[in-house]
Every structure is written in C-alpha cells, then in structure tokens.
Image (tube, rainbow over all chains, first blue to last red; front, side):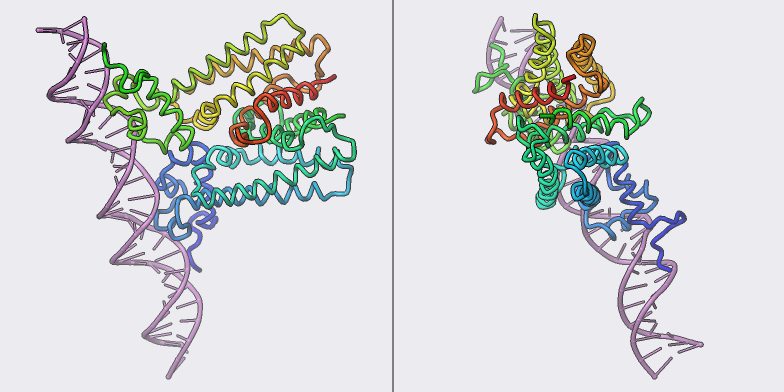
Length: 197
Length: 197
DNA sequence: AGCGCCAGACTAACCAGTCGGTATGTTGTG
DNA sequence: CACAACATACCGACTGGTTAGTCTGGCGCT
C-alpha cells in the first residue's frame, strides 16, 4: 500500500488542507508559515510540495471547495418547486447555516481573497459573480411577480444580505445564545420583511 | 523652523499615516513593508521610528481615527431631537456615506484587525462595542415605543446592518451607477422596512 | 552646546520554495 | 516466481531573499 496515510487514517493531502484551513483562519494567510502547516499536519515540506504547487494553491483549494458547495446548495433551493418567497427564504437561511457550520472557511474567504495570485483571484471572483447572479435572479423573479417590493435594486438587496453573511465570522460565537438555525431564520426573516411590498 | 515638513507642506507624521493607510488598503498590512511606507512618504525609517513605536502603531492610529469619527457622528444623530425612526434612519445612512467616503480606512478596518497586537486589538474591540451598543439602544427604544418590530433581537439587527456596511468595501465602486448617498438611502431604507411592525 | 528631527547602514530572524536522497510500493519480463 | 526497472510518497538540510527594528551620527535651529 502506498503510504498516503500515516498513523492516523486520513490521507496526507486532506490533513494538510485541514491544518492550513484552521491556521489561515486563526492567524491569517501571511502569518502562517508552511512550516507551521506541515507540523500541524504531521508531515514535512516535502509532502506539501509533493501535493501542492505552492502555498497559494492551498488557499485556492479552500476557496474552490466552499464555492462549489455553496453554489450547489443555492441551485438546489432556487430550482425547487415552491413559491419564490419560500425558495428565497430557504436559500437565504441555508447560506447562513452552512457559513456558520464552516466559520473557518468563511473567515478565510472574506479576509484572504487578496492573497491569491491574480489569475486565481480572477477565477474566484468569476465564480462568486455567478453565485451572486443566481441569488439576484430569485429576487428579481419575486419583484416581477409583485410579491417583493421594487423599491430597492435587486443587486443592492443581494449585497445587503451577503454583507450580513460575510459579517458572521466577526460576531457569531458557537457558545452564544442562538443556534445557527435560529440566527439563519432571523436573518432570512429580516431579508423577507425588508422585501415586503 | 524644525523640519517637521519637507518639500511638501504636510507634516511628516501625517504623510506617513496617509501613505500607510493607502498601502495597507491596497496590499494588506503584511504585504506592505515599512520600507515601502517610508518611500511613499518621502522619508526613511529613522523618521518613521521617531514618531511611531512600531509598524503596528501605524495601524492602530488608523483605527483610532476612524473609531473616534464614527462614534462622534453616531452620537450626534442619536442625541438629535427627532422621532426615533428619523434618528435611526439618519444614523444608518450616515455611517454608509462616511464609510464610502473613506473606503481605504474601511478596507483596513475590516480586514486587518487581527494584525493588531493583542492589547490594541482588545482596546479596539471595546470601542467597537460601545458603538454597537449605542446603535442597539436606538433600535430598542423604537421597539419599546412600538414603532419597530420586536420579531428580531436588536443585537442581531445591528449586526445585520453593519454586515452590509462592512461589505461595502468589497463591492462598492466609485464609478458605479449609484452615488454614496443613494446607496446609503437604500440601505437605510432596507433596515427601516425590515423593522416595520 | 543642546536638542528635536531624521538619514541610512546594519543585524538578527524568518520564510517560501528547492533539491538530492530514501523507502516503499508496482509493473514488466523471462 | 524472481528480479530488474520504474513510480510514488515523502524527508529535511539548504538557499536566496526579505523583513522589522536598532543604532550611530549629523544637520539645522534656538
């Protein structure tokens, strides 16, 4: 058997990614040395550079994972067979829950984008844009049907809501009084209330 | 005259602060070397370390300035003689306008807090908390008077709104279709609409 | 004749990435 | 089945470069 695993059963690339995610979230990308990462993962630099092209690649992998998951979940809610209010509420709440469930990824996502190389940065921005547009389409659909107010441009509404999602990693504490689902319901409710005609 | 100014008439400490602010916003704190800062300010390291104790101090100064200004402005709106809806709307819109007017400061503020030394970080958090509480008090006042919905805890509403302010530096572009005031009016409107009973 | 203000060389530390090397497999061949 | 040829997975010392911060000294003003 090739030694892709060590004493622990998790494959080395995943261990590296997990260690990097945690450390990037805790200390930031620049403050985290690859030496720290490999030590946390229980390997050495040779292993890291065997699987990843650069430290930058590690960061990119984190982004790619988050983006893919969130896009899939949004699509599922948006394509569901339900009134647009329910679909929007579901999607808006879901992104909050999954963000809280992966607060480390969220911290990195919103704080470390500018550490990506230019081409990777561009790629991530493009995928984020697709996500944004899918969400906006939901709001525009409701506005056309007359169930949402048209007082505010849909683009701005999307940014308003994602601002709060973005902000979660700043203030949400798992040991606080609210469960992730409660926070999600409240934030989705605020969005829907703001959109009442 | 002591040479606190150079060819240009601006005092050296302010030139250093301005250069640091711009560079921190453009490249991030870690990616900006003190060498770059002093070159941008037209001085050398001797000057920087004459006026500031550390690179960290420079960052702290940026925070202190922003915090002081925003607290003053919030207090002015909150203490005004007007119905609570108007005071909240005014404060909510004002923080958006002043944030857009100082997008560099905002980028730094929300992206570089964790680069502060622990004690400075704690100090900044304490001042942010005061700001948050003043804002929350406005919402609670409206809720007690029955003009705002009590469906959502006031704390969460504050975080919801500041999420969007926080997020401005990510998406707002001065050459976009909306003026700062228009964005501010829309965002304040969304807040007030969400709070309708 | 002193002092605020600043220049610029210097230091000690750190860091991303490289590279030669080793160990453990797998595949091909007679 | 044996053995060579190759491939994969990883180690860890090393390199070239960068960095925050220090220190000595000097200029110009009072």
